[in-house]
Length: 219
Image 1 (tube, rainbow, N blue to C red):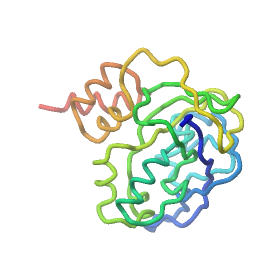
Image 2 (tube, one colour):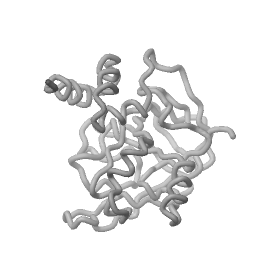
Image 3 (cartoon, helix red, strand yellow):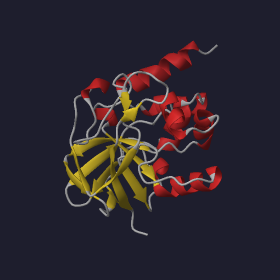
């Protein structure tokens, strides 16, 4: 199967399930196309998708979390385990992909999407209470973390329009071997993975320094 975008998805804002007083954009649904752009650098600068919604501005949005992608193959796997339907966009992703192992992509790997857009693999997703409330599954954060396949956040290197059905093409790889699976393990507390990520210096400064502080604090 040629790697491609199965669907592009926008938020249907709804009350945050934990009662935090804002509307969350985690529930996304397919649309025909989306416009992607590079937002400002901070979380509160909003998503990189025109018409999308970020509720938790302290932890989401900004250039390093401009677009989120998750694989349909993983949604299918979770459907089987949870014995319930999971629609495209159901994990809060803007891009539901097929035919590509997202977690095997290297941090900072660039992908051409369709003919004009270029996206860049950025940072891991951290499962949170809002995600757990949206799913309504017991122990969801732990289960999702243990699976280790978090999808990928993406920066927007070249803006434009992404359509459902657009092909995904890997461009020149970065000069390190740290993939998203390793970066997610590092973020979830794996010190061996964290040392690999720190040595590669492949993450944005804030994320890099967070791992350095954790490793430095270890006895």
